[in-house]
Image (cartoon, rainbow, N blue to C red; front, side, top):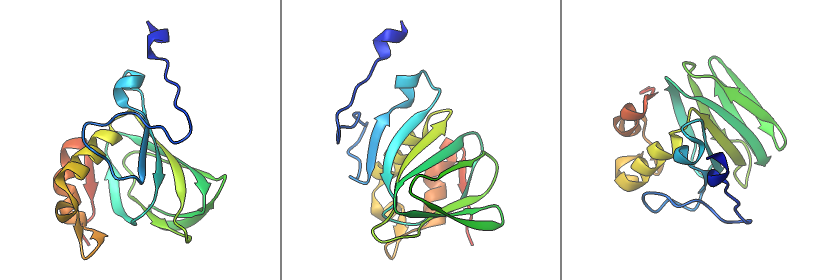
Length: 154
């Protein structure tokens, strides 16, 4: 019954995750909470996210604070607090910090599953996802492949 899925989180509260998540990821709605329809996270963009493609999921991003730099296909946009961007599946995009402090956003993935990829990346650890303190596309692709995400290895 749908009413059994009611969730109320107080400020600062997050949903439990399979593994401990870095504090920059606040999981608000898991894929299983929404019967697969979406996942929702509050994210502080601590590191720039290299160009990648979601082959199945659309990504929606609403900027709460700061400026998010969005590279979409062949253009770059700066999205300020209160702005929104829809990143449809199949189109290459990158997300970068356009402000200091870094932007804080609400990120919705539909269908859900984004948090499962993030949990896998957190479980693998920084040595499996970064090189010299930056996300490494080749390393990320190894984890992301089973989630139908491909990073561009430039």
